[in-house]
Length: 252
Ligand SMILES: NC(=O)c1ccc[n+]([C@@H]2O[C@H](COP(=O)([O-])OP(=O)(O)OC[C@H]3O[C@@H](n4cnc5c(N)ncnc54)[C@H](OP(=O)(O)O)[C@@H]3O)[C@@H](O)[C@H]2O)c1
Image 1 (cartoon, rainbow, N blue to C red):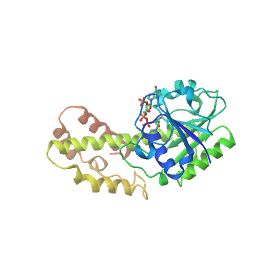
Image 2 (cartoon, rainbow, N blue to C red):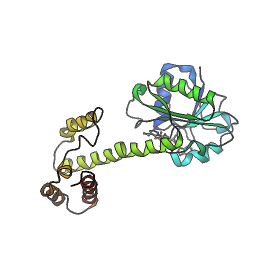
Image 3 (cartoon, rainbow, N blue to C red):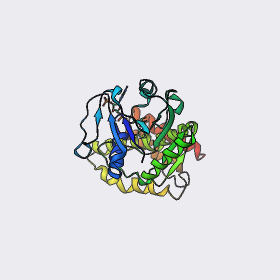
Image 4 (cartoon, rainbow, N blue to C red):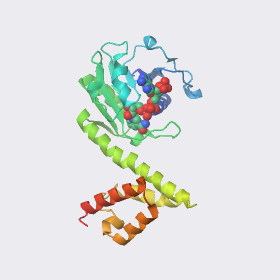
């Protein structure tokens, strides 16, 4: 059994801790967070500290804090030659302190504390320098998910870039759609089947193959109508940029 200390109690570590603790209570031996937190009832037996000098001996330390804080935080750990990993898609493994053995345990999904997740189908992207560490991370990944892949920092940064397009940007576009409907007293629910079909189609067909819409068809009249409805503003600019990008791609 691998013993783990979690460093940080954000969205990712919250879900990792909950899932691992459900499977194997003894593996989660401690949670550290820089400020006090409320561990929910199920997790209340896990030892918790806000004092880095009190972190326990473990096989693995998982840092789950914002990307720009990882490198400096890893330097503050009072550990030597331990396996310390982060969970980021965009931070290089090399950013971690060289006092310890480095690794990455990146679950490729969007996590929010108030939304349940099922790790079974989430790709876990792992990286480590030493073979034994890779094996440990593979075994941990396999205990959570059916898909564990070894990916280096360079590949992971590209994967993360693609994920920003298909998740973060698409979600922002949902929010714009939600605002447009909300401003016209229409419910966002009306778009659910369309959103679901769009996501479902690209599992079996390539995204380019299934592209539809006025820009794909080169339908200038509809495009102008939409721009008129949007008036001037950031949404109009975004509409024009996306339309331009689509027209270029489809030679319209
Ligand atoms: N969220 C996602 O969808 C997602 C998906 C995959 C990977 N990731 C990656 O997973 C990592 C964690 O993301 P997250 O969304 O879980 O983060 P998050 O919720 O924003 O992290 C908050 C946690 O980080 C701690 N923290 C913030 N700044 C700190 C600092 N300077 N020093 C020490 N602790 C600090 C906070 O402590 P306090 O409570 O004291 O403020 C809190 O425990 C990131 O590298 C992210 O890129 C995120």
